[in-house]
Length: 398
Image (cartoon, rainbow, N blue to C red; front, side, top):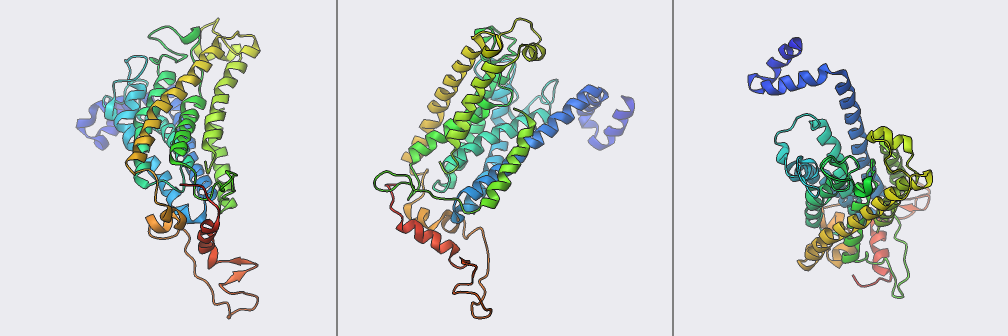
């Protein structure tokens, strides 16, 4: 301990004596060191999913909106970091508090302390921006940049943290590890991987955003039939899929975020209530006789708690994100103009396309058609043909 303090003191300075003692006490305990390493590695895996979201989103939209969707993923991480640091972490884990919302640690004040260090914050921030990233996919290719900033800040700074407080904080009303009151249905909610906390929140928010904003131009014809607006890069979609797959080793609309994340998130919550095994529940929560999966002989209390959670999350996100998107729409801050949407947001909002290339002279080499076509693929018309296709496609009202 004395050797550790003597080594860190010159690096941190005398003003950081408390931090020096804290670090030395933490890493003097091998268990704490291992736990911190595991938590940090898990945080890196979850954050790697942001890259997966970015690649999947970019490949799933049309080429003219590639730069825009990539920038929104960066914005989710940046704005999410700021507002989760200022407010979100406190609302989620600011104990002691009440069952609804936390009330300590704003701006990470009084952190680090036992159970709440910087690695824990990093891990939870990675989850928060994942919820925001899910929502961005639902409203891609037609949303103003300022709307992304506002909803991302609100979601990561308030809406998502409240839900995570309910389930992951020891004070939360639905938490399976609650210590400050009775457990919901004597079991609480088991949602270790965030099926409800992360995916349902992001999916329901995305559903309201897409519903209020309306479909992309050309998504439906005049008869109301769906028209496929295919993404421009299968390579990016596959890359994003594998990155997300890698990120998921940590646990259990254009991008169909509401269906995939909202619906499958709800199913993930239900699945646990059906198949949670008795020995695992007792091992994690340390109390014999706790309700476990219905199909495993544990009765229906855990399922009842999980159904309540699904309904409450849907209601909470609808009552918060729905009015926000409505207000943005009324103020003219949500959707871009039809002209900008037809031309593509990269060109009209970001000053140029994501892909830069130079066409070769078709007369310089045999076998090349006009516009530098190679094997039937025309580089010169890659962007303009997309715009022309949108302009001629039968569309519904914006």
